[in-house]
Length: 295
Image (cartoon, rainbow, N blue to C red; front, top):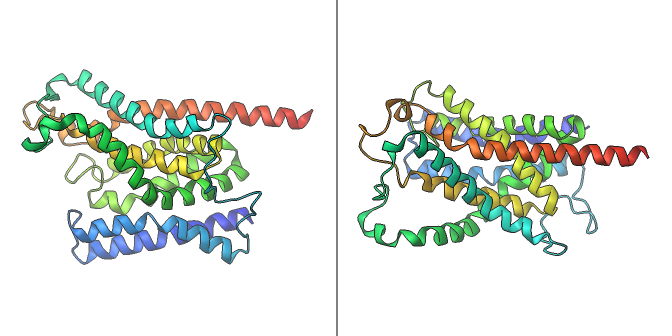
C-alpha cells in the first residue's frame, strides 16, 4: 500500500507541474516572462495538494490531534527553538562558505564594488542580510506548500520502505526531477551552458539529494514542517545573493564558469557536506532505535 501511495502522490505532484510547464513552453512561453513566474509560484502548492488528494483517495486520513501527520505545529520547548534558529542561519552559513570557496578558487571573479546591485543600492548593502531574513520569513509560506509534500509525505513513505539513506537518495532524485521542466527553460542555470540541459539536471539533482538530507533531518528534530519551510526559503533567498559580488567583465570570469554549471557546483559543496553529516546522524539514530527495539 505504501508503494501505491507514493505512486499516486508522485503522479498528483508531477502531472500539473510538468504538464503546465511543457504546455507553456510549446506555446512559445519564455522563462523571463511573468507567465513563468506564475507557473513557478503555483508549482510550489502542487505538492501539498497532492498530499491532500492522496490521503483522501487512499482513505489514509490526516492523523489525529495527538499524532498530526502534516506537522504544522511549532514547539519551541525543550531546546527545539535552536533547530528553528538553525533553519534560518545554516543556509546563510553554507551559501557564504560556498561563494567564499568559489572566489578562493577564482579570485579574479570577485568584485567588491557589488556589480550585481544597482548603484543606488550599493551604499546600503549592509541591509541585505536583514532583508534576506525578512524575505525568508515571508517566502517560507510559499515553501511550506512544497515541504508538506516532500518532508511530511514522500520522504517518510520512502523511509518506511528503504530506511533513511535510500529515502534521502530516492527522495532527492524525485524532488530534483520534479524541477526539470523549469530547469530546461532556464531556471537556476540560464540557457546556452555546456551540456545543457543535462549538466544542469545532474548538478541540481546532487543538490536536492543533500539539501533534502538537511531538510529531512531538521523536520525530524523539530517534528514541524515549518522548520523545513524556513530552511527552504532561507536557502533560496541567500543563494540568490551569491551573484552580487560576481565581476561583470567576462575577461575576469573563467570561460568554463560562464558556460557551464561549474559556479553552482562549487557553491553547492558546503551544503553537500552538511547533507552528508545529516545522513550520518540520521543513520546513527536509526541504528540506535533498532538496537533499543532488540533489547
